Image 1: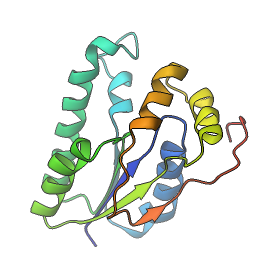
Image 2: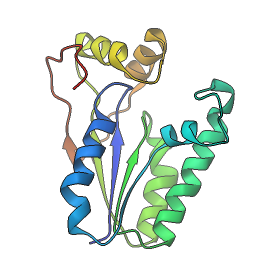
Image 3: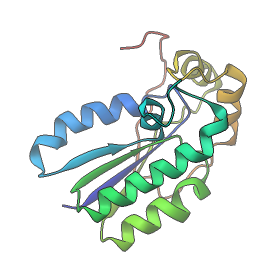
Image 4: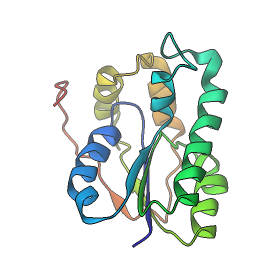
Length: 161
């Protein structure tokens, strides 16, 4: 099984939480698995002070390189945990590359349908994304008719489990 799951949704919508639990579920059943995320860049020596908007392009390029490296290494199960708000953000690179390496690709949508849920997500995100920016991402989210599964649960609380 060579599988890539691409997670999509605004900050605070549960993507990283899902990735963590999915690795606990699937990780032991495959020989190799990895979560690839731009968020991990902020924990490297390249970003000694954590998140910095000025390094966002560098962080996404770093993530793309980690993704290609995982596929080149034959990692059996890969999760791409990024916002992937527009098709261009993930289809022109991640889907194309994964398919060229012979991976099956699943698209999982975490973006809330209701503005009230989007506000809760924006407030509970762990990356200090300002409310206005998170809401802009929610508004600009492009629906994908090829989405394999919608994972977002409506009626959220502000609690972070």
